[in-house]
Length: 445
View 1 (cartoon, rainbow, N blue to C red):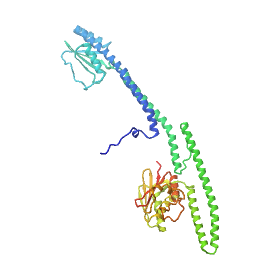
View 2 (view 1 turned 120 degrees about the horizontal axis):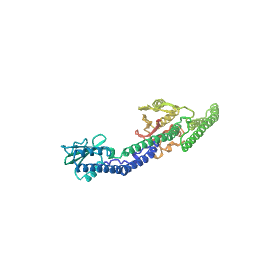
View 3 (view 1 turned 90 degrees about the vertical axis):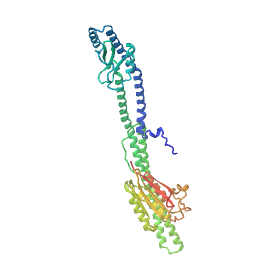
View 4 (view 1 turned 90 degrees about the horizontal axis):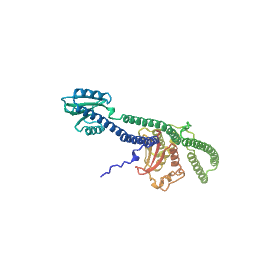
């Protein structure tokens, strides 16, 4: 039998810093307010209301006893005036009426039992009490020899008015605390969100520029450290590009002279071997410079990954690799550097075409990323050598025996491009029987 999933507390708690900080501040404060409210209502409001109810019960019992000692109309009129003026009790005698009358609601307040218990104890007989009807008064009915004596007492004599007022102030204070906390926490979390966005954009190769440093001292320090790190990395990339431009010029010039000298020499087997060595050196130099140069100075833009994949597949097919199927699913446009992504896809598709007779490219657009899967039916690579395949100048000829060209920089260049866009490339076994290379390019939120 399948077990039901277990839910832990951390599974339902908020994941973001904003809501977690708000919960840390508001939850203890709200819990404290709730405890104070419960203690106040139980100890102060309930006790005070109970004493007030007992006082009203004593007044009602006294009025009834005075009337029963002298049940004359004159005494009733005097007691009515006495009850109304100092005691705020409205009193009338119903000569032929039942003790109980219909209630407005079937239940009343929890404080009714205190008043009814005290009134019954003082009078010593059955009493009808109704506090369920709307209005400022409650009804008390007591049976006497001359009829039913009905008294109406004001509610503020039976219940303390400070209880609801106290609860209102507690709720108001809690809401004020929540509003202040939301404003304060938002101002503290916003700089962290800006820093995270700038770091993510820098990881994709975009220049987010500088923004105003705000927030706590630690956040300001982290932001300034990020700005300094970004400038150092940008300077290092610029210096690398300048250095590589000089290296390219310095190395290509002697290679060109050697090729010219060999072309002017009389043909011989040694000359042909030297020409092939020079061609290998030039190819090695081109791959090495492509790997080291990285993204150079290309500006980011919206790139249609599906169109790039179709263009590269058509070029590879024209070079004799055979037809390459390209399947598109969903929206496959993402921010990036077009030339760098084209180089990345070209390396993946070229590598698959070099080691398999059948190549399939699948481009799938998801909510958070664009996935490109390049499959071939070649010999594949053992799982323990997946990471080894990404190392620069790595040649896995023992397993990919059909690889007769290149110096082992294709996958290294492709992963370098993918990671510079905030993504990555993973290798796995292909459904076609060979190797699958999956390129993941994240989309900004």
